[in-house]
Length: 149
Image (cartoon, rainbow, N blue to C red):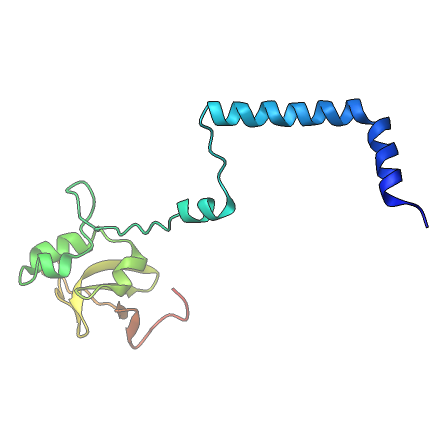
């Protein structure tokens, strides 16, 4: 068996200059870190620095955007409800609590209404509005509900 201490001594004598240079660079690096007050972060410090941020949207309405909460805003004012229902997209209208998406053939229109149907059954000239079906809270009512909308 080879003598471990004797072989180690031979290795150190052979590579003394290399060992000295590496030790010197490590010592200079350590002195630089201490003098410049450099702190090395550990994995634990990185974990503690990470935070979970939750953003809660207040959902405040601006006058520039259509008010999607028209049911409470215009409660009891069917004329204003009708005006604002007409500005809603079909998908939003179908889920609304005070608007219905009424259709006749291929024509669809978002109007004020509830589970009993559209609020107004005639136009401004008194002509009857005959709708074949209407969607209220995403449920279709009427005799001719389409397969898909």
